[in-house]
Image (cartoon, rainbow, N blue to C red; front, top):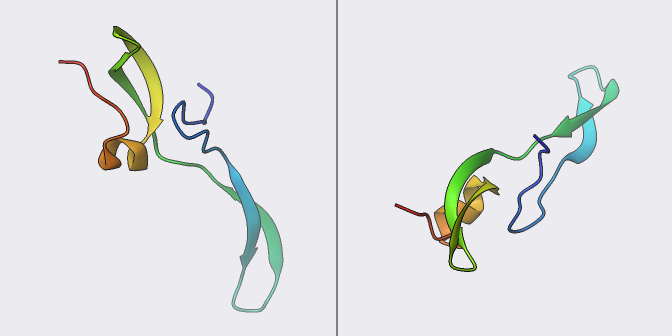
Length: 63
């Protein structure tokens, strides 16, 4: 499963982790993606949606 939201296209973000001794290393942050049955264009589909889009009501969940 690709770690990309189908609604807002949120994906991996990259940056540095920094220790107490100021050593730096590359790391990544993955969004919290859920597989949800939702109504898309009048039909029921399973989509990958981040929890922020679910919480804000950008996705209409099917019953």
